[in-house]
Image 1 (cartoon, rainbow, N blue to C red):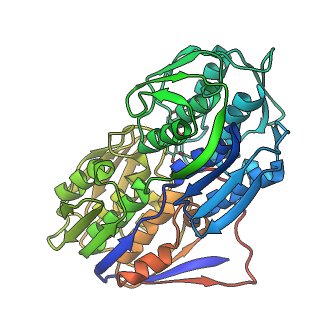
Image 2 (cartoon, helix red, strand yellow; image 1 turned 180 degrees about the horizontal axis):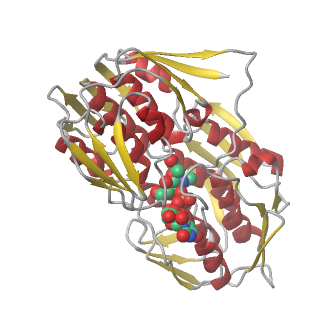
Length: 433
Ligand code: EPZ
């Protein structure tokens, strides 16, 4: 079992370099299945979700070469199986991108459903299935597997209107449509930066995708895609998490290797909460000296305030002057972590999608258990803000999405260490992010 031990109450000062975007990497890696030849992918974050996804491709017969810490060469030419049902598949949410990629390449896919999840109750995939079906696939869910097939081995283009703005459905349908016969139009598409990054990656291999970043994406199917070299964008949410950490703990930190435009939806709120933010070319400087102010936040699909920043921002608001209201506009229930904050003296009441946070003058260290990736990151922030010692268990959730969080925080003066005791077993990873 690995734990993080944080001695809080110290401001953060210095520089943090942001890694490649997790949610772009987990879409781009399966997309390599659509290419003939090798894809050299740079700026891949070193996180456990990526490792699991690369292992899945290896199990299927993919050839993966490590060029350096953040660069891989992926060649899927030898993959012939369209069945993916290993244990790794059930551990990460993004494994379902293999449905779109396999349907695109083989016209058939048999893919294990991703496992349970730790927020939002059921995470449906009806919009993915609706889109594949419109493109000519017959899709069934049987014995925990999604089985999708086409009559003549190829999907055809279709007009698809998504009933909810879904990142996963938009990505899966783009993957399926890239090699389909004819034109696919996805309306009410998600607009997150990782959607644009996937479109740029596929276009760099020869795909014809227009409109990514708007809510109408047009994909004209091409007959083949060739490998190439591509560099993944910086992680908006990792950057947002460190910005929130500085807003919470105080200090001055230069967050490097970011696309400042992607962070606007976050920095505007942090400024409202009392931080000063300066935008540079590919960096953002954040300073927080004044007391934290209360703010109301509603999470929405991009360019709204990201749901994946909701727990971290709630952590900061626990010590704001005044009362804040947070509304979760994407998931049905993403407040499981709140009980852990109560152990630190926070005052929060949750009612469905609303959390009312009455700011307190200080948090006190406590023993906490991470329950998902962003909740875990929020607990780290709360630990940095608190007086005394905070111990966080189940940190494997955090390591699914944050590369070297300990090293990056220590470099800006945080007193945080990771301790592994070999005798205690790690809680089994069940949730999929
Ligand atoms: C992606 O999940 C991200 N994961 C999540 O980030 C993020 O919270 C979420 O998008 C929203 O931004 C990855 O990119 C791997 P959705 P995804 O489909 O694609 C409903 C993190 O912390 N919906 O956009 O699974 C759904 O229930 C992770 O990094 C349907 O109703 O989310 C939800 O309410 C956690 N039917 C809303 O849409 C569907 O078929 C948005 O879900 C699909 C989704």
